[in-house]
Amino acid sequence: MLMSETAFLELLGLKAGASVALMGAGGKHTLMARLKQELTSAGMPVLLTSSTNLHRPTGNRESGLFLVGQHPNWSAEVTERLRQCQTVYLLEQDLGQGMLKGLEPELLIRLRRAHPQAVMVIKTDGARKRAFKAPGPDEPLIPPFSDICVLIAGLDSIGRPLDERHVHRPEIVARLAEVESETRMTPEIMARVVAHPRAYLPKFPPGAKRVLYLSKARAEQDRHHAREVFSRVPPGLFSLLAAGDTLSGRVEVYPQPDQKSLS
Image 1: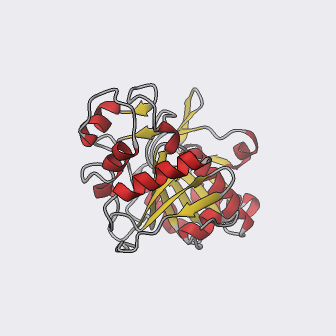
Image 2: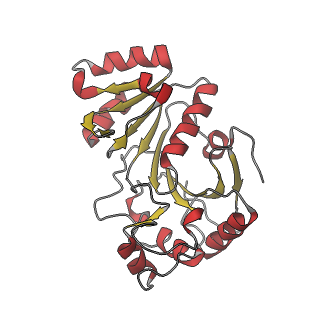
Image 3: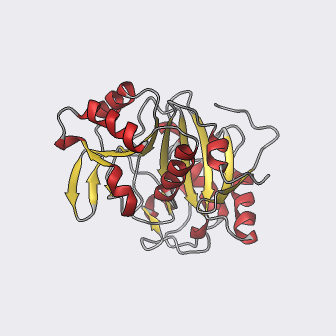
């Protein structure tokens, strides 16, 4: 089923006050921008932030950037920024070289409490611009209040070598998938990693909606690969399986008839 241009808003069931944690590789920044666009079009205030480092927003996003480290009275000022701009990128401080420091867990909790009506979109790990990754032992840093966790994997990684150029932490990917290093990525390898009990799954907060989103599904071959991945993910691990093209807003939901929802 192909959804409308507000696909992700509808797909995730976002409402005022929701908190969305993004993790994985293959388009977290692009999905953040898409959610910002859809949420503001729907008239909802949006706080975009990170629990890890984030690349500095560029272009017209810069006007919505707020660094709490420079503002002791940050909560009241963020309220005013939201009133004026509707969306705010909220980070700790400038690290230089185009990077911004994310917020500490305690500050994220304070932010959530101070602005209960805003939708929070939170980047929770990094991938060094690779299309696929496995998490390190200390990531993702998912705030405990997150309502929805979206694990992203880029379909454009399939067919490419399992090496540092194409995959973040390829040695962990190989170990989790039980394959040799520098093997070419396959749908089976992707499925083994995203479904592995020592990868992302144990990091999700209890009760959060679990979404597996395969990005960059632009051609029929990509959609075929998505079907292969989903067919190998055991039922019940995720509340929702979806693949799509984030830039266009087109997304397809892949239901599993015997899948037990964890939402």
